[in-house]
Image (tube, rainbow, N blue to C red; front, top):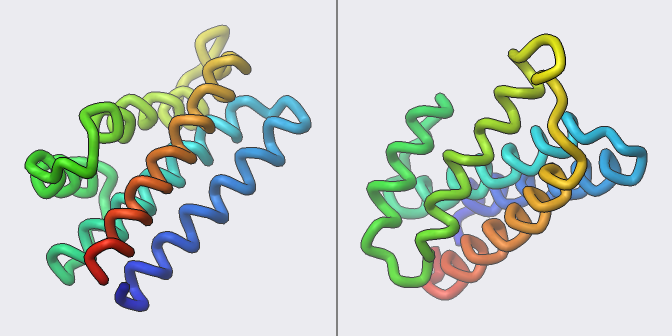
Amino acid sequence: MTPEAAGYLDKARQCLAYARTNLDVNLSNDAGRNAYLAAFHAAQAYIFAKTQTVAKSHHGVHTAFNKLAQDDLRIGREQRRFLSQAYNLKAIADYEMGPDSVVPLPRAQAALVDAVRFVEVIAQTLEGEGG
């Protein structure tokens, strides 16, 4: 695995740790945001491993990841879908106001479970190909 891809995976794992800590103290917005960011950084690792380029914007990462992963049988549809769906948690936490500005705790907990799986799948994929 390249040092750059490994760095993105390290960042993803750091976000998972933050999300766990956030959930321990019922900070569901922060947990949801960090679950998304874990997937975002893992997707960056995958993109870099495949293209040796860096997609920096959220939209750019989503687009590049979906394009590159669509034919990769090791990455399931649920992982490809999770990245875009989890962005909604970040959007709620960062941009919404009023009663819709809180990520429900069960949704943040589920997002963390899915983010852990996402990071694991990407890590296994990259380790399996030496990328």
